[in-house]
Length: 299
Figure 1: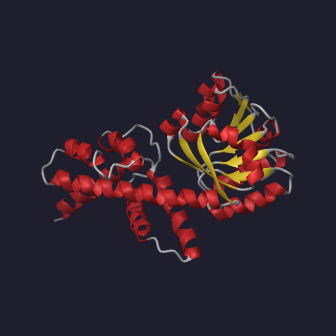
Figure 2: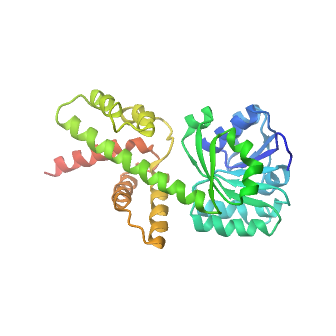
């Protein structure tokens, strides 16, 4: 691998992957990329991203490959086959898998990567588009310590990385964090709805709540989205629900009870049923509000 400004390859140029690619372009890296639709990458191409047609071509061009994709199925799809990443990896290449997928799927894939002489680290992130833009992501890394040392400078251009253990453990820690994201947002939505229905102005209530002891950095960042939903989700309820399910699966295998995650999963499933799958996590308030209206109408 190059010792300075390694060439970076991206598979997945959505909100997170695209913003990370843009930041690394600005840092002076040669960046190659591909995604399901080239149109979404038009602005990045205009800024200097070198578009290639397949994940294999990304792996062949880059010193460090980054994937940012939605789930296990897509991960396996971009990894496998004659045009997949595995077909293009060579000795010395490092694959940073920055999606949130199941720890078991990541561990199995890391073992396949090692047979090519390349290395794979799971490096999921905590944070959303604003944190990528500011370079303040929290990055949990699982995999070989020596490999981590080689790519740490790249990760530090995106945020604060921490090596937490062998392959899969970065993902376990990310899922642990995402339990709290879901539960915190649900609790805020419950409290805000209670205040609103009592007659307190909802904007006043929200301001006081996030300014109080419960105002975590995540809740403070998302507060503006609760009553003024964004056109495009920072972190969709569908993906949140997927992550909570992954956390519950991991916990079952370890015999760990997750009572608040279980309850959050019920509400997240309800949100999908009501059509909120693509809405931001902050829309949990709208979900509870709709449920309240429907109950009143039924009564």
